[in-house]
Structure formats: C-alpha cells, structure tokens
Amino acid sequence: MTMAEVAYRARKNGTGQLVLYFVPLTLLLYLVMPQNYLVDVGTAYMLKNRLHASAAQVADFRLITTIPVYLSFIFGLTRDLWNPFGMRDRGYIWLFALLTAAGFFALAILPLTMSSLYVGVFFVTVTFRFLASAYQGLMALLGQERQMSGRITVVWQITQYIASLAAGFIAGYVSENLSTAATFILLGVLSFLIIAFGFAKPSAIFAHTYDRPEAKGTDLWGDLKRLARHRAIYAPIIMNLMFNFAPGGNTPLQYYLSDTLHASDAVYGEYNGIFAISFVPTLFLYGYLCRKYPLKNIIWWSLIITVPQMIPLVLIHSGTQALIMAVPEGLMGGLAVGAMYDLTMRSCPPGLQGSLMMMVEGVWFLASRASDVLGSAIYQADPKNGFLWCVIATTIMYAAMVPVILLVPKHVMDTADGEPNPALEADVRAEVAEAGA
Image (cartoon, rainbow, N blue to C red; front, side, top):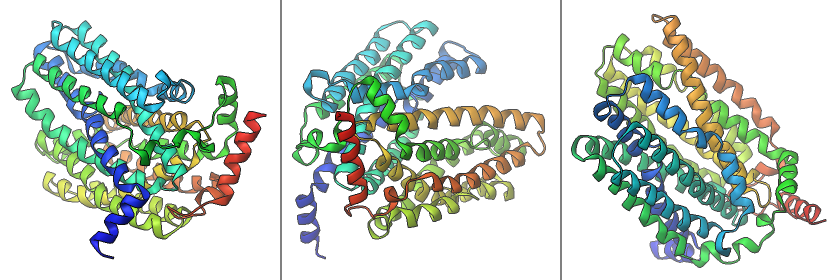
C-alpha cells in the first residue's frame, strides 16, 4: 500500500482527524494532570525546600490532595448525566480547562503557604477530574461506535507515556530554575490551551456521535441500576485493580536500589522513565495485532506475558543492571495495558462511558497507593529479604489476574478492532430499549 493510499484511507474513515485531535489534547492533559510529574514533583519540592515540610508532611499532602481521584466515579457519572451548555464533552473541556487554568493562576498570585497549596492543588484536582471524565468518556464512546477501541487505546496510551516522560524531565528543570509563581503560570498557560479543544468540532469525532444507541442513558437511578447489572464491567475493574496492585513497584524499589544495591538517587527516576517508555513498542505491536486477531485471542497471552514482569529485579546486583532490566520489564507490560483498556472501552454500558472509565482510573490510583503502603510495611519488616517478598506478592497478584478473563462475556471479545460485532450491538439496542421502557 502506498503512502497516498494510506492517507486516503485515513481521511475516509476519519482516523487522521481523530489523531490530530486526541494527540495534542492528551499531551496537554497529562502535562497538567495534578498527579503527574510536573505538578506532583513541583509541589513536593515547594513543600520540601520552601515550606520546609518533612517527608511525612509531603506524603500526607499527596494522599489528601489525591482524594478526588479515588472518587473519580462520581465525576464520570456526572459527565454521563449532565450536558453543560448543550455541548456535552466539549462543554466540559472548555469550562473545566478554564477553571483549572484559573486555579493555577490563583496559586501563582497567592503567597505560598501550606494552606494555599492544599486548597489550590485540591481545587485543580477536582476540576481536572471533570476534564478527565469528558476526555476518557468521549474516547470510549468513539471506540464503541467506530469499532476502534483498540486503536484509540494505543493512541491514548502511547501519547500519555510520552507526555509523562516529558513531564518528568520538565519537572526537574522547573524545580531548579523557575520560581513558584512562574511554575504555576506555566501550568496555567498549558491548561488554558486546552480550552481550544472545547470549541473545536471535527466532524469525524462529533458528527452524530451522541445520537447513536451507545450514547443513550436515562436518569440517575436508572443509570446506577444499569451499571450494576452490566456484567461486562466487573472484569476490567478487577483486572486494573490487580495490575496496579504491585507492592514492590514504588517505595520498596526506591529503597532497594539505594540501600541494597547502593545505586544513586537518580537511578530510581531514570529506571521509572526507561520502564515507562519501554511500554511504547509493545503498544505499537498491540495496535497491529488488535486489527488482525479478536481480543479474546490477544488478551490471554498479554496477561500471561506480564506475570513475571518484576522477577528480573531480584536477579540484579547494581543500579546499571536495574536500568537495563527496565527495558524488558516495560516491554512485557505494553500488550497487557493495550488489552485491558481495549476491553474496558468495549465493556462500557450505553451512555455510561464516563462512569466506567473513571471507576477504572479511581481503582488504578487506589490500588497503586494501597500496594505501596503494603509494600513499604513488608520491606521494613524484613530489610534483608523484604523486596523479594514484595516481588513474590506482585507476581502472585499478576498470575491471579489471568483467570479473571473468564468473567468477561464472550461476545465482548469475539471480534478484532474494526470488525462489526452484531451480538454486542444487539445487547446495546436491547439495553437502550429496556431503559427507555
């Protein structure tokens, strides 16, 4: 196939417009996301270096300001029920991008105190939850309607990994070279740029998107009942919880590298960056495979490959070896991430895409924080072998994730990306008709 034919097909099915809309939007969102490196690392250094906070105070700050993320389902359900200014997701994007920018600009103007930082970051975390709900809900809806949940997942995940890596590097420079006010002004400007995506209306994304059966909801009580009865939602929620419940992945790894392997503090950050970017090649591979094979064939091997992901870390003897092992570990995770988010988008009930996507995101963060607390306790209880026990616990959790696939209704996974799924479409029509009745 020539490049001209590729370009023609992209224009014909709207893939080009979709990429042009979601790639820059994803980059901006993950740069200003309060729980990502640019905001998180920046505020941590403000607390440590300018407000002279202790490590415990920094940990408490992160825990408390992340509370809205644990409650993400509420924001997702709001997105599914409320239509601001009659613009649906576009209304959420421009309104809450404006409020997020206002929150950062206010932090730039106000004197830096513990109270102002708490209130300001908590506020932008709340406003960003609405942005995330609209963004992920819209992607899931498009994935269902266009039968391209796999490809949208790949675009989303690759772009957010790149954005997170960039945010990590930018955060280090900003913390060392910019004042508090300049840091928050930068974040405010980046947030303000997101407003443009609330007014953009490319036809490939928004033409009749909310008129189709997949977008139809009811009222609060009716939607809650439908969500609870929708059998397909439970497997992706459980899988994402188990995948992110990795007791050895954060604090224990940091202490293991520095205390046991005597690596420099920089190695932990470098390891995380290499690990994250190493997901990208296998995510590209998933983008190819998902169009060739049904999800039911890919997801089993994707999760099985991930099971031994952390084992190489107990076989190394230096920080350099840890950086080398970060590459195969990341590669082992890419297919699983693609398969689980593909499954999540396919599993959304009609009109409740925001609810399920945000429920999964809330579980993701909650599992990550809870497993870090557990892993830290295990590591402290046995400093000599604690990291080994953490890796064993993580591996067992990943292995237990594989049979959860059996909970997925078979017809949800019967087709490859881009193929019509008559059984799933019939389910959607039946659920919409029942809700209307």
